Length: 343
Ligand SMILES: [Zn+2]
Image 1 (spheres, rainbow, N blue to C red):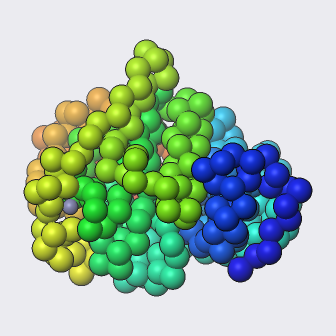
Image 2: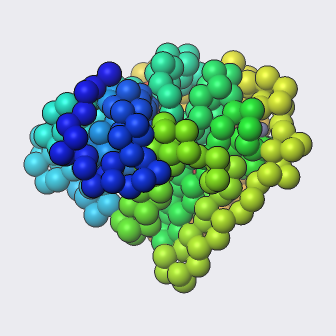
């Protein structure tokens, strides 16, 4: 535990619901942040500045120029240096508060490592960009009884849901089945504005702070949904879902963690390519996927598959059974990241 500097946090401790006692709990708190993208950048910045004692940052990616409008931990030097996001973020955060213990982890979250990577913390903050990782977080959280804060942002919209296992609805209560690949827009197909991501990251940080000091009951189990373009903010009570529960939070069923669901990634022999199998056996709507990808690349399509050069040197081939082949890399984590990005 970190002893905290009373002067540094004086404006925070003056906020009565927190006080010196709350600040001491923050100093003793341990948070894992999964993903150092837009949401993770914002929540990590606020949690480090708030004086949370230990923060684990987990990310599989490196910063790119197109991240800079919203991923506030990174700058042009980080893009040029090519350090992994978790490592670059740890350096930046250590300059903000040298007293906080920051543990960077450069890894792709999988069923095999999720329990270890997300273990030993008081709160998990979701800064990922894909549903598969979120189901893994949800299952680790439900199995270990660890509260977690789900967040998502796309376009000008954001949403936040705090899950307290045993008390509130969980992610599977809300989204019982994953939609087929390509059914939902992603930031890479539909775009995103920085303020939407920062709002979500800031609300997630507030939820994490409240969880650490034992003050989250008023908002846990309610989903905040906001649209910064239309100016609409809603808070939806998920208590009816919590009352029913689901197979995971009520029944102890962990299909993603136990590898019964999830995309398998395999290198393709003799080729600079990896194949990412679909997480479900639902067939996908190739026309809808083609329409989304057409925003970023030229798409060629027939009734079985479509193909698009989504990034320099990277060609994505998507099959109607949900499988995807990423040409241009042999790195399984990169292949999985590219599929998550566009599908
Ligand atoms: Zn549930």
